[in-house]
Amino acid sequence: MGTTSPTFLARIFESTLARYATALAAILVALLVRGALSPFVGDYVPFITLFPAVIFAAWFCGIGPSILKCFCGPTWSKAPVRPACALIQRS
Image 1 (cartoon, rainbow, N blue to C red):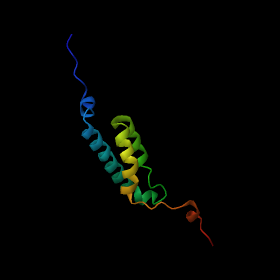
Image 2: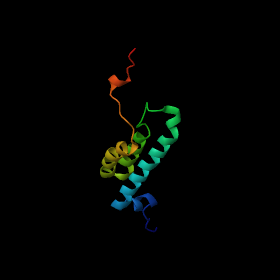
Image 3: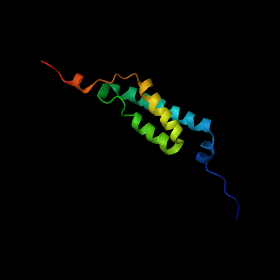
Image 4: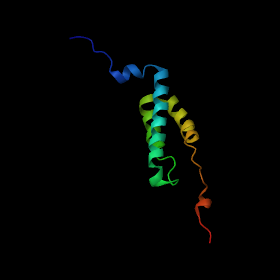
């Protein structure tokens, strides 16, 4: 019958700038969610909300934005990463 137009997501992700902006927005959402969960989980899982954000970027935005997320996410989270030996309490 007629030609079909590309879907909304397909049109957005044709633009490289839109893919990177979406990836950075997903980082910000993940960090806001992590901030909201901070009173409940403390410092035990500092990057738990960044994992789904990186998966989202890899799936929908491509490899470039997901690599950007892997570097920006932990940097922006300001969560101290403790070595495993620092978690052992000594009496």
